[in-house]
Every structure is written in structure tokens, then in C-alpha cells.
Image (cartoon, rainbow, N blue to C red; front, top):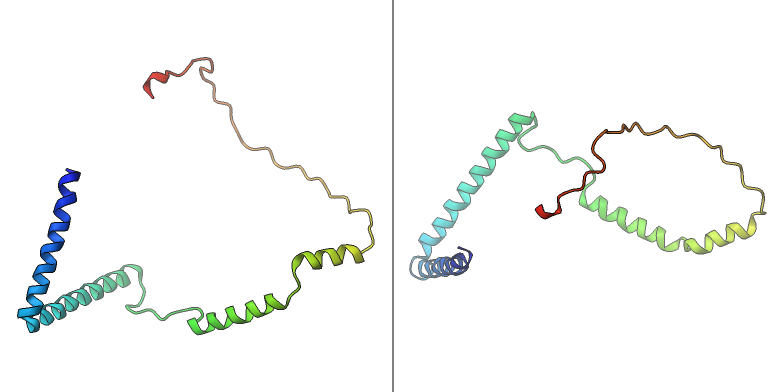
Length: 135
């Protein structure tokens, strides 16, 4: 079946291209009208789907966009990258902090007991070997 489909699909696309080329050469106005009709039906289907979804989920047909605009995102990206370039590398700032700070005893961390997981033991035949022939 796959080998059959491997040859059928390119043939169908070839016929479609030949038909489009023929219609474009000998009936350009009809071709453009067909494209406009297809675009109109696609737009109509899109609006119907939006209307159904808006009614189902209780939103408006064309909801207002919330959040930052693309221009605001671009500006934020520019400013954040400039700040990152001016900041010293992290390995330099770490070394400077440890060299300046006098060494003292680390604060003793309080040990807190974690709650035991709520697991149960399931009784069963633990010595029974699995039949590996099925794999």
C-alpha cells in the first residue's frame, strides 16, 4: 500500500499543477475568481469557528490583546542586553566577594526532618520468575 501511495501522490500534485497552469494561461480571470471564492469561504469558515468558540468559552469574537506589544518587547530586550554587557562577569564578582569577606564559621544549618513518603508494601509472589518468551 505504501509503495502505491508513493507514486500516486506525486501524480496527483503533477495533475493539479498542470490544471492550474492551464487555467492560468487560458482563463486567467476565472482563475482569479476561483481564488477569491476560495479565500471568501476560508474567511467565512474562520469567522464561524471564532463565533462558535467565543460563545462556548464566553469571550468576545475578537478579543483585545493583553500584555506588552512587540515594540515594548524589543525595547526591553535591548535594554536588558545592554545591562548584561555592562555588568562584570560572574566569575570575577564571585572571586572579589570571597577575597574581601573575612572567613568565618559557616552558620549551622538547622536539620529538619522530612516527612516519610506514604508508601505501602504490596504483598505478592516475589519469587515467581517472569516468562521472558512473550517478549
